[in-house]
Image 1 (cartoon, one colour):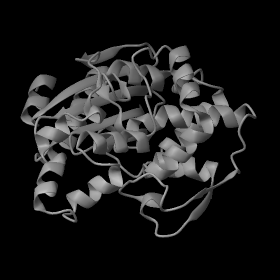
Image 2 (cartoon, helix red, strand yellow):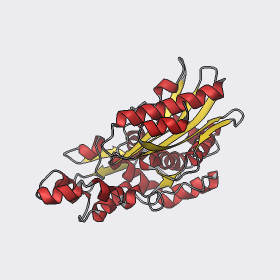
Image 3 (tube, one colour):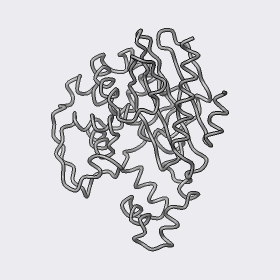
Length: 299
């Protein structure tokens, strides 16, 4: 089955890039299309964190206090806590990369600085990958685009607290689709090719120090979401990061390592045509696309 057909049947736009890291052999489909990063942004942020820790510029044991009224919204982790949390930067980075904790991510981002993240991406050669803003700024921007003060007010509107008319506008799929957060020309963005370039540099230990890259890979191997598990042969390993946004964006980037040591960098980035479509259908298409690409590279 062709990649075009896979993505068409899942009712989404999709891009794929897969690289055999031993020799650079590749499989690609629309790999230079810009996509919104969503939570895949947490990989370059994590890379910069471990680079600064290894360089002695950041203390991983530094404690950060996250209070409910100021934390970044999110579906899991500290974003859902009722009480203030005091957590080390190292543990925040772990939460960011394993369960995709948004509050933890913005705390780490504040510690390392967005400019430093972008400088490292540029040095690696990821010219199409740009981190524009924090996750909180992105979510508040989406709320503003929908006529609300901030994301907390938007969430209240979507829960019906402000009446049926306001709720209807707050969940209008056409209005949401026009939010800046979903526009790769305005939001934090990448391409499938750039994503594998980043992963290749992490694998090679050149994206930062070898120690920093190894630390990042170790935590990525513990990500809870395993959309690409089917692409891993028995005895192999997966070091990945997923991303999703407003039921429209679903992304996955990963290092897939075979038992014989052969490694592959893969990136599959998608944007659905209809937010009512089943995420499971898109996940299945993403997994199938990566499996097909790796079958070619393994043969």
